[in-house]
Structures are given as structure tokens and as C-alpha cells.
Image (cartoon, rainbow, N blue to C red; front, side, top):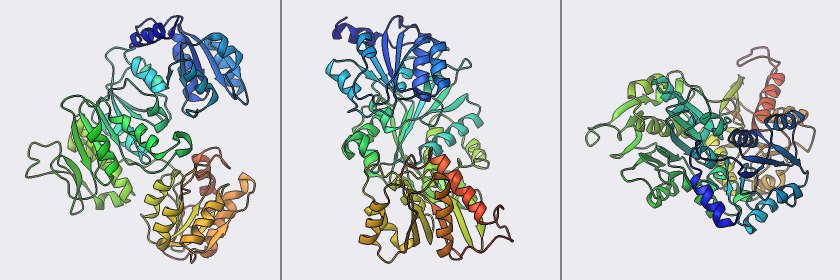
Length: 505
């Protein structure tokens, strides 16, 4: 089949009920996403070959059970012979593969289309009846909190809704759920958006944009272009961040469905079609018939303080989630009730312990400079535990902007030299300690001991690494868990406010 015939066939594959039988597909990657792709395609009758660099024995067995082929190649520096022999009509790639990966370069040279799991899921979303609407969420930071909160608001209002996508539940698993949903709240990374072409969400948001994943995209412009795709073909509401001009420009330039509205959110007074804050009251001035003269009260900053949800970047995420939920018809009273019980995910500005006037906070999910900046901005005096894999991002602006808040810094991870040099250039007065390369089990114990030597009453010892975790830890969750355990061990094994713990300075 020549490339024109393949293109024609793929253009017709827009439904679960299309004829996918016999389609030759290479699946790159065998993580949670890769397996969901392979499992789905085999169910549809496609001929599937999974190509991966590594796999757990249980994964190998699962691939065999479902009836797909599997090639393991530790280097994968060229397309394996089995993939070449397959003559694939389509590649479905997991997010971890860079666009310049040798297998993807090979595919491009041969005109083989490349999709991601989200593109495939969008085409297959009608498996269990009327397709669920999609609410699409992206941004450099805050995606998971916004997705979880939006989904919770929808469920509390009586809709069948679920969070999925980059949040951990593959979207292909969600669209195959036999119960079906009214709406899916889909967290989308820039990797996933890069390979999307068909999606038409009900509502969409890009929460913010800052330098991140430049090693994957190659440039900031390419990263921004990928994020902007979240708004393409949006049907009802394009939600954007009023304090981030890039997101506003994305909406202005997006090709959307006629009638889609632009809805802003921000921490200031809301405009006619915005969500914002007036005198400490979070307000909806978008979804009310009286928005020219009044706004609907959602909650107060004081109430959010009591819930541990008052950090400025968290308030912004709450406003974005409110905008998305309101666009789908969630009543304002229901949103208020949701905010009375919602809790942040673990490792997101999570208070681990308090003793001697010092708070220990786990924000391990701050895996880039933008997230760490927001976290540092929430506290007045910080002993900052930072470092890991910086992913090609310039850390200097962060150190320069937040130096005045820092009591000291404790550096971990393989890219410590970049951080060390940034402090030397921009914050020479801030004491800097380093945890030398050591075993994973000892990293956080050493970091906590160093932080405790300088922390004073009123300080926050903050793990907000501004970096990825895979140099020394399984993931950001493992990193945060080890930090929390090290804190508890140092304080004598107790919880917050333990009175017989040793002093922290």
C-alpha cells in the first residue's frame, strides 16, 4: 500500500466502529501508555508490534497474553529489523520519545504517520455509546491539581466524570470503560499535544507557560506551539491565564469552533468574562446573566487558608477549575461544597511537620523552575532544598528573583553545578550547602540534616527542586516520600508539632 493509500485509510479511521482490522502498527514504548495502546489496537484487530528498550517480566507476559509482538532493544539507536519488516502503516509513540529519535526520523523519511495515545483515543471515543465530552488541561505547572479539582466538581454535581491522561490513567483506558462517562477531564503534556491533530474539546485551558522540556522540544517556541494546540477546535470555552500573556495570545490565534468564548482567570478584579478575586472573595463574572453589574461569589481566601489552599498559584488553579466546571454547567453552590472538602495531591506544598517554629514542606512535584518559583513565592523565609535534572532550563532567573527570600539553599542531584554557579553569580550572600553524589537512601537524610543546621523559627524548609527526579529517584513521588520520611526520622519519628523531637537548629 503506497503512502497515499495509507493516508486515505487512516483518515477514515475516526471511530471505534471503523475497520481497523489488519492495520500494521508499531507501538513505541511499553510503559502504562504503551501497553494501553497495544491492548486497544489488538482489541480492534490490528497487527501490533511493540518496540521498547526495556520491560519488566510481567509486561512481557502481558504483551504475549494480548497477542502483540514485542522487540526489546536496549539502545534502540536504529529501527529494529522486525519493525522494518512489518512495514508499519502507523506508529503510535509514547511521550518519552523525542521527535529526533532515530526510529521517528526513520518513520518521517518513509512517510509513516506518527500518532500519540491521545490522538488514537480521540478517534476511538465512541466505543460505549455517545462519546464523552473532553475538557483539556495543559500548562507548565498546575495541571494535575486543576484536573483533579475540575473532575471532582463535576462528579459532586452529579455528572459521570473522570480525570485521565497524563495524570496517570491512560485516556485509552478511560474511553474503554464499560460504564461510559459524560465528560473526561484530560491532562495533556506538551509531548502529547505535539502529536494531536483531531481533538475538539468542549473546553480547554493552558494554565501557564514557562521554560520546560526544552531538551525534548528543541526550543521555547516549539514548546509554546505544542501547548497552544490545546485550544484548537475548542467548542465552548477557551480558558486562559490573565497574568500570562502567552496564554492569551494562544487563544487569540487559535482556530476554534464558532461561538467558543474566551474566559480569563487571575488573582485581580475580574473583567466581564473572567474569574478573579475581589476583596478576598473568589468570583465568577463569566457565567452569570448579570455580569455587567455583578459577580457570583465562589469562596473566600480566608476559607482557603483554613483548607491549606491559599498559596497564590493554588488559588489561580482553583479559579481555572471553576471556569472549566462552570462552562459545563456545574452550579455555583455545588462548587462551593466541593471546595469545602477538596485536598491537594501528595507532594504538592504538603506540610510534613512543624517543630520549633520551623515548617517542613514537601513540594517535590515542583519539577521545573516555574513551579519552584510559585512555591518559593508562597513563603517569606525559606531554606530551599533544590536540584536534580534541570532539563536544559536556565536556572539563573529563578535564583535571582527569589534570593531575598532564602535563608539558605541545600543542593542535591546531578546538576548541582548549574545551581551552585547561579548562586555565585546572583545570590553570593545566601549560604549554599551541597549533598555530594551518594546513595539514594542517604540523599534526603543528608539534605534534612544540613537544612536543620540553618533553619530558624519562622522559616520553611521547602523541597521544591526545580528539576526532574530521575537522576537519583524513581520519580517525584519517591523523592517527596523520602524527604518526608527523613524529616520525620530527624524529628524523632513523630508527626507535626512533636514536643520531644530534637531541636532543628
